[in-house]
Length: 264
Length: 343
Image (tube, rainbow over all chains, first blue to last red; front, side, top):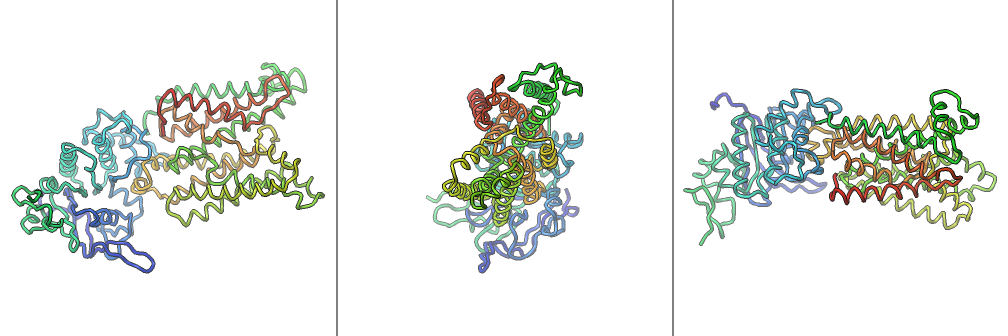
């Protein structure tokens, strides 16, 4: 992909996120201006409680912004219905499935819901797309297994396949690597990288795996108490953005390796 | 969603089982009628004796049809509520339908002393009980719904329903405390539930409302399947949660409400049938579960009714006692055998 024919998928304009109640506004972060291009893998990093989840909720219309706008495909999200949004944006959340008795195929097929008829029957095309999503996430061999039989890593792959089957320009994942071992953390993020390139979808994920994000992402959004910035990982390293992430008493960012080290 | 063909055989077997249970139910009763006469009557011919013809057409056939409507209707309402509230303990009455109905009936039967002796005989007719039950369940349901509009969490609706049930139960206790022994007995008899008291006219009204409720439930199959992922995922798949929730609740109210009005508060079936069906069909797909619950609900209700008749005797046991007596061991056996609950 050359830079000049890339399209902007998601854009925020002077976005402030936070919580509004009747007589009180608490702003978590303000003046957020980010743009995500087509086919990009973008990581969102920040300390616990900094507002990563609130930002993702605001970007996905789960939570209203305090100020400013979010545009997906140049249309403000508040002007899009749930169904319209479902065709441009899919999610992988941290919450558990209600019914683990679904087979992997059934789970992934539920991603086709925005396109199916009133009773939810799959057309031949739907089945093709579902199988393609299973193939892209390497889980064809377990497609008849029930979700309760899966390991955490397999289940996460199935959830990603479900989001792929939804066939959206943008996939947003909330901490897709929690509960996974080191190998599977790398595996899932590498898979996301591959999917972004192969399918030309924009993939945004929040994560605490800063070193992996630096190695894999096209751009990284760094959330610190005063500032939210987005740039390519190497630029962020030179500008010292990662050093501002955490209090300086315990760990320090090592620019050479791109990871945090414990202070001795 | 998938693999619908592999369910063809179980569906065929269950359907045949339903027809057999239906015929057995009609042939059993306090008067012995040979199966041949029953079949003759059902196919439009004449039975060997006029009285047999009369019994089958005006008593046993409506009762068997009622059993099918009650079993399937309550089973489906239970399924809808369990999925909506993502709670395996939910049943058709979590929204206060049966407590509302019992309040209405309690006011008519136990409170009839308040209206004076002249009206009491008029008030305690069949229709007044049906109307009181419908009004009661409707009002309590509306109260639950209005309160639940104020809350965003689906779980809170469940608690609100339970609270309203407690309120009505305490009002019923107060009424019972002041009621006479005769009135109390009458009220308790209503609480046992009954399938056999419906005339063809009443059955017609029941089946019309039942059909509307059933169609609405079929219309929500897709929403129910989406809800299996949880509400946040369902929303991200374009589902209008509030609207779907309302449609599912309306369907349940129509089904469980009318059934309770005509047959009394039939316990257990609504909770147990969905579990039984999930254990046997091993799926969570509502496109399979809904028709399967329909079949199993009807079959279990027909069997329970046949048992409550105590074949070849004049004795009729309360249907509410039989449903749990037959149903509970089946569920326990299935859970022990498979060692895990499917939900």
